[in-house]
Image (tube, rainbow, N blue to C red):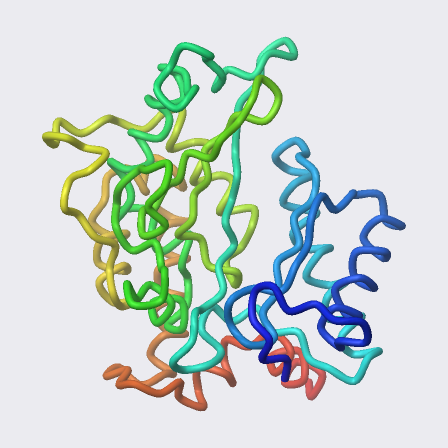
Length: 290
């Protein structure tokens, strides 16, 4: 296990070798990585790559995970996309950066806007904040995902928007005419990327805007367990409009059945069933038994 932290990247470091190899394979498959580095937690890493149109971007996420697993396997390692694989250290997220263009123009850019974000961009993020609890289950679909949403570990559990506060669900990064965007930070790495993209873009474009006072900085929080997220998801009118009643019900039933395999009272430690039923590599092993 690499324990060097964010800036540790010495020659021969196994994590650095893994990151470099993964980036090369990524480039060879046609989606260019922009930057990569070890992260805060032991053996944690981040690889960012180029923008793509929404469905292709979701494809890239699936390819990215597959590449990481295959490269890790070839190097005698295991790549895990559990949100909280290790107790007591920062979990892993899938920060999702999004913007909308029309006729080649980035509609989120306004050089005179607050943080350079346009009125359209703020309306987009306001709708996501409004429906933050409604769509939380789509962005965080597993028991383990709610272990990550712990404020002690730089986790985005607050339904807020901020340019600097990393505890906020949405961050507004520094951008320019090409790169201006909003970053939805509460997405878990085990989420279905197609449902993530659907929920973020559909909500940002067509959702409603709450009359909550000071919406972007109101004291509101995401659920701290999957059962609360399930209840919010089931009762929300918006998720029915987003997915349709039938698909919504099936999705919720599947996630509840999956959650029930794990201990209801989560406690402090990651339970064996969490790994067994939510760890991709373990799941692959189980499926190969059939």
